[in-house]
Image (cartoon, rainbow, N blue to C red; front, side, top):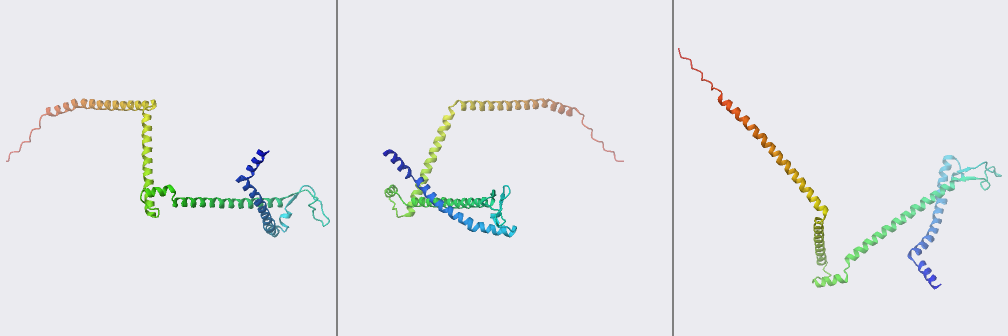
Length: 245
C-alpha cells in the first residue's frame, strides 16, 4: 500500500499533470467566455443581418422539420414537440470551435515566442558572464576580467585556434581515410581500369600518328615525279627582235 501511494504521489506531482489540471480549469472558464461571446455578441449580430436580408428571426429560424411540425396555440411550430434539424445551433457550435482554435493558436504562438526570447536572453547572459574556470584562465594569461576588449580578443583568438586545430584534425582524418581506401580491392581495381583506359588511348594515338606518317610517305614519291616532269619540259625560246628597217 505504501508503494502504491508513493507511485500515486509521484504521478500527481509530475509537471505535465499539474499543467493539465491548470489547463482544464482555465479551459472551462475560457469556454464560458467563448460561449458568451458567441451567443451574446456574434449570434445576435448574425441574426440581425439575416433578419434584414430574409425578414425572418435569424439563426433561430434556420431549421429543417422532419415531417409535419406540431403547431402551437399561437399558430407557430412548437419546437419542443416537433422533430427538426437545428442548423442555427450547428452554425453557433462551428463559430465556437473556430474562436477557441484561433485563441489557442495565438496563445501558443505567444508562449513559443516568449520561450525563444527567454532562451536567447539566457544565452546572451551566459556569454556575457564569465565562469569560474574562464576567470582562472584569464588570470593565468595575465588579463583582467574587467578589460572587456582584452577578454574579447583573448577568446576570439582562442576560438580561431580551436577552429584551426579542428580543421587540421579533419584534414588528417580525411587523409587517413583516403590512405585506407587505397588499400582496398575496389580502389586497386579502379586504378587498373584507369591504367588500361590510358594505355588504350595511348595506343590509339600511336596508331593515328603512324597512319599520318604513312600517308605523308606515300605523298612524297608523287611530289618527286611532278617535279621531274616540270624539269623535263623544254624552256621557251626568247622572242627575236625585229630588225630595224
